[in-house]
Amino acid sequence: MPNVVAAARNVSSKHFAVASYSMDTRKSLVDLRKWVSSMHITFPVIYDGRGTKGKAVTRYGLRSIPGIFMIDPKGRVVLENMHGEAISHIARKLTAVGQKFKPIGVTATPVDKKPTAQGLRVHVAVRNPEGSEYTIRVDCGYYIGTSSEPKYCSAELQGKGNSFVGQVTVPVPLNAMEVGMSPAVYSTILGEYVYGDAVFVGG
Image (tube, rainbow, N blue to C red; front, side, top):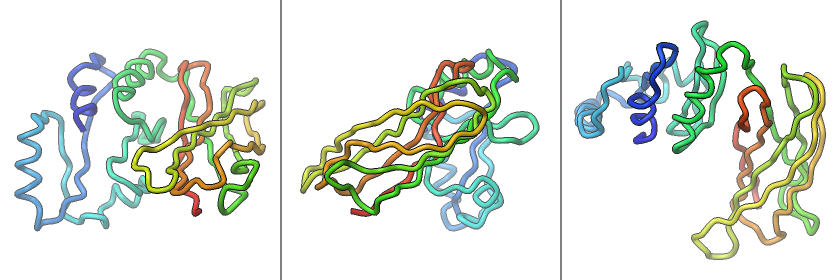
């Protein structure tokens, strides 16, 4: 949330505004008010008291907190799954390129239920209005044994055209546990990787 607050404060554009949707219930309204004050939030915080049954949760398919979305004036999700300092950076870029950027969709589906000796095979599907050729990347995070420090690896493949399906093997070790993967497509218009939904793999 500090990075969202920073974006609201630092991104100077008439085409950018921040609003927050609270998943609090009536029981935690007092805590919500204290938290908004302690974070020095000046943008709107929308609260309907319905918690996980609220309209925004259903409409945008919220699966984790925080869920961060860039939404255009027509209410369409343009970007999602941004975190950290990248929020301000991408907000500046997106407001600069405007309608030149069209939403890119990318999903990753594990072919294997757990890593094999070769790694983890992943089926990737892309919808990219930019067409031409582009790089697709699958980032993976995982743990080994009892270590509390995550490890990371990734694999890339090249896509082409407005729609693309392919497969890539990410070099996840055989003994990896709690594997999470995030697919991304490089947008030449935005000059950034655009991420799809994170997927967790058993094993």
